[in-house]
Amino acid sequence: MTSWRLAPESFDTPDATALRRDYYDEVASRYWKRPATSREIDEGLTNDGVELLTPPTGQFVVGRYGGEAAACGGLLMLDAERAELTRVYLRPAFRGKGGAGLLLDLLESEARLLGASQMVLNTRLDLIEARSLYVRHGYAEIPAYCTGPYVQICYAKDLKPVSVSAPGH
Image (tube, rainbow, N blue to C red):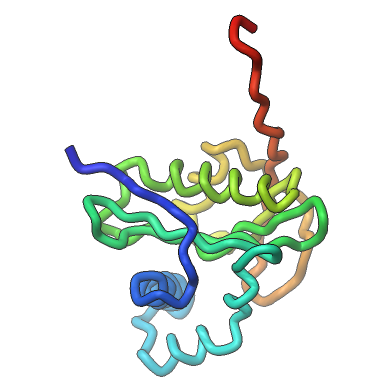
């Protein structure tokens, strides 16, 4: 049986870089309503702050399905309590296989390890699949916590501390 394997990984490995390019290609192409060019993808990824997605300021995660790079996501610590979910992406061929929920679970766990008690995110209204994923996983719409040309809706989720109960409790 083919299964998912997700783990933190440097944002600049060949697989992570390819996933980040695919992510940017998809969101830019949808926004512009035409295929993004290689030059536009390169420009979009230049100085995009991805280097902050390493502890202690953040984390980047890659998911593999059957050994193939299939998904990625990141989190950025905004302050001592809030982490921002960013660059959540599953390649189209791997959607519907349970990876998105596992990706969110791991990113939330990594955020807790960095001290976050809340995860926030911003997205565009046209990214309907992403928005419904977040709502399915407990994210609720909140007032905008940031501004920008692509910030059309914001969500948050309180990250409950992981409790370890004693045997028999």
